[in-house]
Picture 1 (cartoon, rainbow, N blue to C red):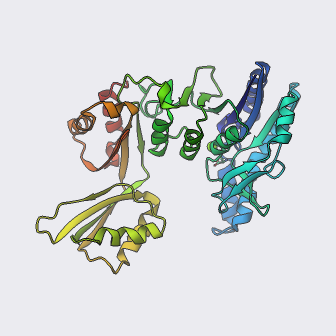
Picture 2: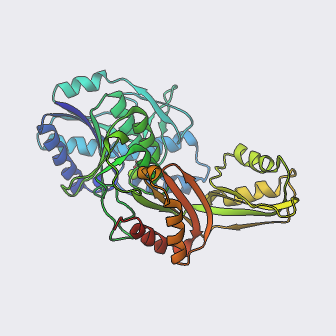
Picture 3: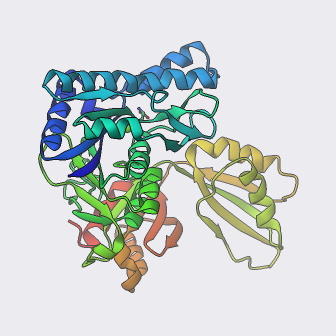
Length: 403
Ligand code: ASP
Ligand code: MG
């Protein structure tokens, strides 16, 4: 007998038919002698709809009430799924965040799960019951409802898998696994059977949308094996686990991209010690996350150009912080938000020389100009013109034998 946490995302529970379908999956899983805890998202589109309602009242809607509002989406799916299970003869029960309770820490809309009491639910599982638990939410120390960030049901699933000491956490979604790149854009993309936590973490933070990156991080930290699989087909999914168990025949595992970056250049800035610190300190104090940084060599040792990238939606805030920064002198600030970040990721890169040059050559063959570069042991990212995104992904996918 093994204990499983199964998480069903918004599209998997998007209609009554789908909820009934999910109930059948759970029935089958439980019938194979498993103990099942199911975590559910809100029906697809629901959370966005609730956000819109709050905006109709105010763009600065009260934070406590915002979480009460947003958490209601998952309550609906919990009840519908538990009801659907009972209807097909499976013993099931839903618990709300405050009934368990799921304790969280941190500010509203951005809390994180720290603990919960498992006893009642474990007793119910032992008694052949299926426990249905809402994703994305909890309560604070003083009993207020909290939410844990958009897409947070993945994080709930992983946290609960840890706290309940589950043997595996399965993420049911609308694709049948993790692909070597976005299969909706690149039809030759291939499903990956096994991937390491590190690679998955890079892929999801670099733009792959299958799983929330903080959830992957938690799974990695506590060594909780994950499987991403489709609610709608029976095909095998992608297993995500510890690197030691994976055999790397390829240096690159996947190509990810995102279009949420912007590039800022400060031209003609003084070249002396302390300047970079003076530029970046106020940005970091305002919680602006700087990703890549490039400083040119100055030919006269007096002035230079400095380029960096940030999240696109923080561009105007960044520019205004720079313009109000009395500590720096420069000639001009230019920025570009029509850029994309394309990355290759692979744990096999560590042991394969020449990956960097191969990537740059491939892009130059396509006449794609590289605007910024960043590397780590298992990834290489470049910033390019947004219009070249697809061309770049296609080329890199072929170059690294992923088609
Ligand atoms: N319903 C929440 C959202 O849409 C949480 C989730 O789906 O994971 O962000
Ligand atoms: Mg979701």
